[in-house]
Every structure is written in C-alpha cells, then in structure tokens.
Image 1 (cartoon, each protein chain N blue to C red):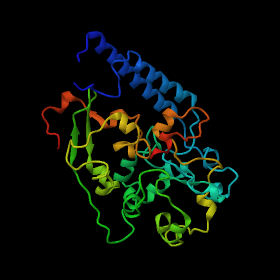
Image 2 (cartoon, rainbow over the protein chains, first blue to last red):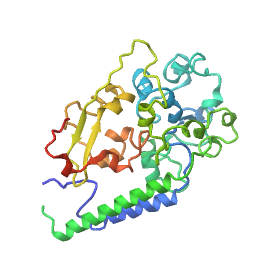
Image 3 (cartoon, rainbow over the protein chains, first blue to last red):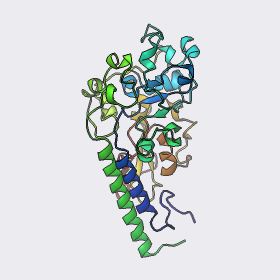
Image 4 (cartoon, rainbow over the protein chains, first blue to last red):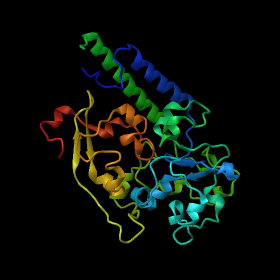
Length: 149
Length: 186
C-alpha cells in the first residue's frame, strides 16, 4: 500500500511537530524581510568579470509584460541563473536585449542600472518560499532551494 | 498498512500544527510595507541605480492589495484593468487562452485542488507548462507537495513569483464534501 501523503512521514511520531517548529524557528530567526518577492539576482558571470550582480525585478516587468513574452517568445527558462546570459547575447538582441536596445527600454550602456546588486550576492530567487523557510538568519541564499528556480 | 485511532489523532494534530505554523510564518514574513531599493538588502546602497530605478511602493501601492508575495493581487490587477501588460513583442505572435478548470482529487485529507486555466493563460502561453512541466492529459502528471515545495510543477512559479506556497487554501479550495460527483475536468 502506498504510504499516503509523502509530506508527512507517519512512522516518525514527532516528524510533523519537528517540521512545524523548524519552519517557525527558521522563519522567526530569518526575519529580515527585504527585497521584493520574485526579485532575481543573477551572478553567473558578473562578478567574475568585475561587474556587480544583476537584479531583475519581476514586479516591475510583469506590470508591463505578461510572463509569456519573456518565458515564451524570448526563451527565458524558469530557473534563476539557468539562462547563461552574457552581454554578447544581449547586444545581439537575445534575452534582455530584445527590449533593452534603446528602442523599447534603456540601452545596454546603462550598465549600472541592471548591474546594481550588492557585491557578493549569489544567484537566487529573492523571497522565494523555500528561501524564506530554509535559509537561516544571515544566510546568503546560496542553498539549493534558493537557486533552484 | 493500517493506522490506529492514536495514529489518526497524531496525524491530525500534526497537520493542524503545520497549518498554524505556515499561517504564522506568512503573517510574520510578509508584514509591513514595501522596502525601498536602498534598504532591500540586495541592491548596492552606494550604487547609482538607487536614485533612478522605480521604487516598489510607487508601482505596487496603487494595485489591488494582498497580504503576501508582492502584496498585490496580480490576477485581480489584470482582470480589473489596473494593469494592461503586453502579451507579445511581435505582432504575429499567436495569443492562446483556455477557460477550463481541472479538479484534482488526490489531495489526501486536504480540500481538492481546483486549477483554473483562464487566469493562468492570461499570463502564460500553453507551451510554458505543456508538455515540459505538465502532461496535457488530466491526471497524468504525478505531483506531491514535496516536489512542489522543491520548485517543481506548480512550484516553478508559485513560491517564486506567483503567490507563495504558504497560501494553501488558494489552491486547495474545494472541500471534498462540496465537490459532489463533479467530473475531474469541468
């Protein structure tokens, strides 16, 4: 017979309570509510190349474009850091460069408007549920969960 | 394997505790107003972008409020015309929308999940989900909350940009007692 809902392990008498306390504890400990939900930090190549990490604010873009435009037409994967974007591709009109070309949105020579992250910030989905539940206080968001998407 | 009365009680108590905890976490982590870019913890406070980029409060403060995520009811914002985001860059892009609901009954003792295609296809194209994340055939995609919490299936967006996974009741919205004999696809 199936073990039922895998989220709860019935054979461990305190699993649910432990999980609940763990989540609550980590949430309270990590209360440092910061950047907007869905903000993406992209630091695949930036700091290696001497530039600040890129911050992509979903909230700003989804007011103006539906998800399908970038995640369909422009080919962005649903994974922070999963697109291997570099400036050459952007200048060629791929990814961000489809709009950030001086016609639709600001051109690529405004380096610091995208490369605006705090030094040392790793690639992540900021404020993601997993990040909120699993990253301890002062964490860098570099857990698998935070970088998964 | 069978469970006795004590096991059932324990499971219920644990579930209530977990639900309560998630609710508390939601309230705790999403209380307060939008942070300015200067103090959001990921922008460089010394960088030139701070004074140029739009502040979240300016854009989000005029949209329908929510208690979690961006504190914006994005679906309502779109449906009620608060925002009118473009659906394509190229004029010849085919806009596809679907208005069917899927009722998922394999939810343990939680309420059934009602998935509405309409609000999803307002934002997304069919190809964003099918067939890479979800099979088109109803019931053919095996999902668990563990996988979703780990960023798979619904968790590709919910918990990252769409409303957070702490909002159990927004998906688990149909009590089994109210579902009656409705077909799985309505």
